[in-house]
Image (cartoon, rainbow, N blue to C red; front, side, top):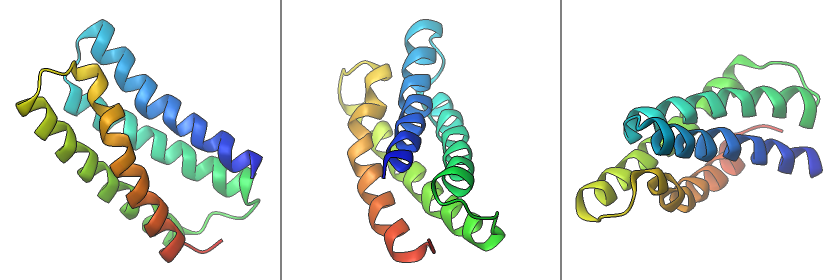
Length: 117
């Protein structure tokens, strides 16, 4: 459980921390930054979970399923961010944090249902 939690923390650091940093301090566009950080975090998390947490070999079909689930989550996050961006005055660097619960619920249910351990 500890390695899985650590990988989740790394995912959050890259996804949320990276987005916050680049939007806040470099004024990068939130949608592009969120997308980039999310994809990088997804690739890192899959790699770490495969080789460290579950100590298994790379499985291309499992990777495609994992990546597809997370890209669905990315789409949900982007929709939530777009709605908030257009309808609230919340700082752009904070929007991914508000979208995160929707993303994590999606990931939790779909990875539990469709991914092999």
